Length: 103
Image 1 (cartoon, one colour):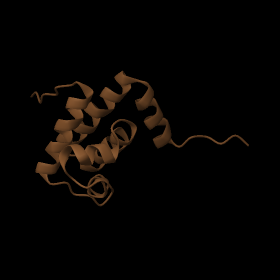
Image 2 (tube, rainbow, N blue to C red):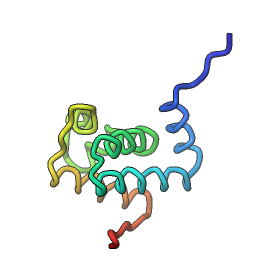
Image 3 (spheres, rainbow, N blue to C red):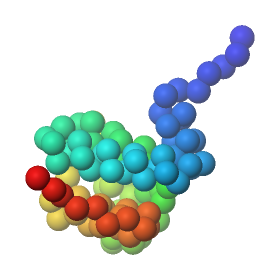
């Protein structure tokens, strides 16, 4: 029997392999949060982080323990604005993006 990848594994491997896909994933995660869908936004950003910088490197960069970041983007996580903006700012910088909110 052929073992198939889970959807999360597929998304993460695609984000690792395709910069355009990764950028779209980052945009979508942030957009979901801005639209009020925090749960979807957290899932997307968690997958993006795992596929790109990783929680260890992110934690070092923003001076936050990786385990705290993992919990923050987990199902029960409730990120404070300060922490969330630090994460988003760093992810944008690493991706070479500058995202703007438009009305």
